[in-house]
Length: 251
Image (cartoon, rainbow, N blue to C red; front, top):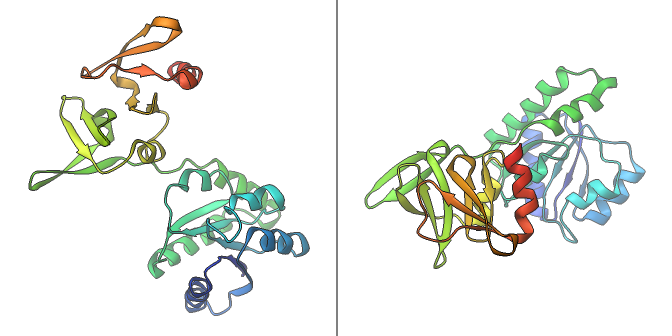
């Protein structure tokens, strides 16, 4: 198997190459590329490798720029210190998404996944494999661990009505009306939760579909929501999100 490593940290690239050789000495690392520019140049001049290992933050830009500038058709295993790009990664050629420092067992699992997928598709039909990968639904968070006093509680996302931010603290509100502080920002939660079920209506609120009791047309065409359980704060849909919100309600 031929592969390339797109990574701007030399020690990280060497460690990854060592783990690949440990897994299979026959794996050939054709190039280690530290930037978007060098990656694009290499991909334009060389035959596509069987598999690409790719960091997200490179010397000159985010790696997603590579997909815009080069004919990259190879499947990709992302290796990164950042988990907020997971959804975006699965919109391109991603087979797996490994957080740094890469664990050898997780690396083996990702390589085995690649082998299993490849075996399902003949080589001439490998584009179909990439299409299948690109269409695969990302995995969203299904539960949260919440510390309440000296106890740790697991709360399923199906039990959550909405999240809101107040005085720089984010709160989770359950269907039973419990309000619990949570160590995630609303920005972070938006990327972790399934957009089919949760929508960020404003900078202050992220709501589940089931929590919306009534939608009111308010002053100057604004939308005001009544939530269940009732919120102690007024709940408005931001003007720049109204169109997307209406489309989301109608899906």
